Image (cartoon, rainbow, N blue to C red; front, side, top):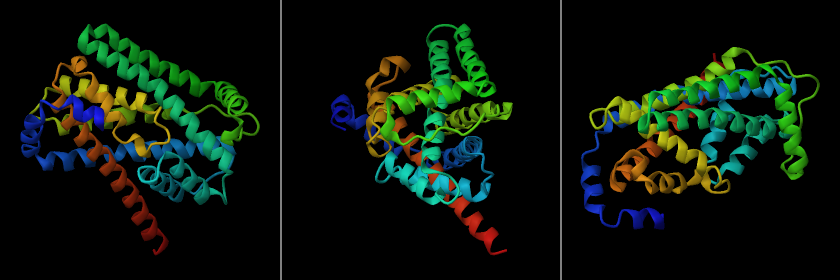
Length: 286
């Protein structure tokens, strides 16, 4: 927070004026556009749990628990969200499998993210040819899905290096994940950029909105290092504001975009969790 305030010390009047010009209906529309991203993320996660445990889960309930856990991580922190999910699923899934699925999802999601973010930023600053970097990351993720021996090896490596994480290795031979697994990871990015395009409609061109979204995504990857901080509070924003030259915008505008993006994506997570919770309660009372 101190770094953010220092970066904006000469631009606070601009930031204040920009705050007054916010069109909140666009923020609300962006929230709704981002909700499917979290639903897709939850379904992908449940598929991992089923593959790693060999247990067929009640998907409606499992999706609800996962989405609730994502909201919990904003309050006391990421670790507590994981503990919440492990506790709620303990009757069907071992906690170590929950840890393994979360860890692997984080790793494979960020393999794709590195290619998408890198390709788009280089496309915006250099040439369209760099988009092949994003295509390459999609191909790599699909190969990882088709050859599950990589999952077993990677998780085994984590177990040996970090035994205290409590990761439980999948039992038996893992089946390959269908191509829809890769499609779901790609769909997350489609909804992510759609939210940015709606949020920045009228302020930035579509191309610039996508590049800003890519830079925000890149800041999120770096912010993963702040593992014990609740949802990486202010870490992502500080990184986003730290390099205005990447997107050729001033720090005040970047801070406004970062703040609104935080509102949009947290709001979308809450809406997704509430929708799943209410839908589950309705189904039980039918």
